[in-house]
Image 1 (tube, rainbow, N blue to C red):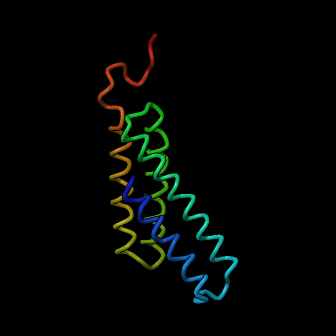
Image 2 (cartoon, rainbow, N blue to C red):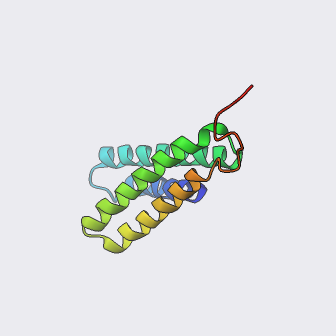
Length: 114
């Protein structure tokens, strides 16, 4: 998750730099996309922090994130970028595996008892 967040952060910054440098024809659209990518980078960072701290709420957002990453990979693969799509699907499956095992060490099966 942390690596995904870093990649998204770099992509977002590159979009901003390209837009400011005048290399994008539609500045408004490019800045909007950059903001969305940076917000996703923040989300990935927050999920990674929750996973590293073994917080109770880390599993669900990680699983949802992984499903979306797999769907993005499939879309890329079918849309003309098969190699990139397969890579993104592999990252998504790894994210799902990490999310699934995020609370594997808990003895109570994820239920809190008092």
